[in-house]
Image (tube, rainbow, N blue to C red):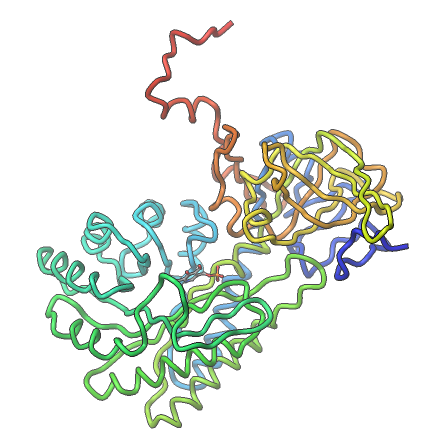
Length: 470
Ligand SMILES: Cc1ncc(COP(=O)(O)O)c(C=O)c1O
């Protein structure tokens, strides 16, 4: 019988050993002993080599996703005679090595701060393949972007036009810029909302675009590359992208009459499956529908379809990552709902909201599986929680785990490659976990785990002579 505490969408599994392709990297499987392998490496080996919690990134999955997405957009664009520039949205997951994979696969990179810019440059990205975002870029961030030849800076407010123009002028360069438009379209997972203007901090209102582009064009130190829109994240419906494209193309058509505009940037936001019943759009279909609509709307407006840019992050990094945790404590909590009493098993692991904030921040759902071994035990409704001093410190809100799950066993949480490491914190002075990549039966460390010494080293009151080393 279904546990009454389980949400309606959560299916009681018939076999807890299954690892559905929808939410796990393609390389994930169980070996002959039932232990989970990622990229051909056993989870036991990974945990003993790098410790837990551990972010594991499947390099082939990450690279394949970059290529899949690129092909999905490039093929219909080529048929239309336009080009597509793909920026990987670094905010999803960024290390120098990951930036190198992105570069090797022919992508540009979108950075949203001086720090992300520093990582991209340290990885060897040339400025010509970097785009910079941000609603409050500092003068120093703008200067660094300009002096490193960043291909495009996305202007987010009127104020930034003068700032960027004067920095470009003092560097004697012509800086490529885009203008981010608050299109009034906001898409969430299952639907989208279109208003005159969305109530949020990014971009400039549609009705100001023409005069702002005129101002941009009046600066000889700026080159206007086109309009930009990003309508949200974890989107499952294509209609929001199409509505935003229509609104931006109408402006693009008016602005094109006064000067050439090389590109139109439609941002990122493509959704992924976090749990089995999530049904994101097939990326090939999504790309074809966006591009065919860009073509037909352009034809209606009597303009040539523009070259397009996209900025996917989550869809590349998310499904490439799995987080491994060690189980520390198990506790059954009796809960009464609608007069019925049921048990929820709380599984406490050695990380929590400091390595995956998404569950507590957005109420995001994940799933978890016993990774150390196979099991024939019954499923029990479980909540995977962390070790922080917050009752909302939840890693996986609703999942089924085997009734014989024991302490010191490993559990794995899939789809944790995006916005987990990048949103990690030191809450309760837990060091941020290491990241290891796996490929072809080998693993390597991408970022080492943060130590207590790392954290104390920033504390000006820390005096080593007070520490008893014995
Ligand atoms: C401007 C911009 N581009 C791209 C992205 C990437 O979105 P996603 O990771 O959902 O693809 C974001 C995410 O917030 C964004 O703000």
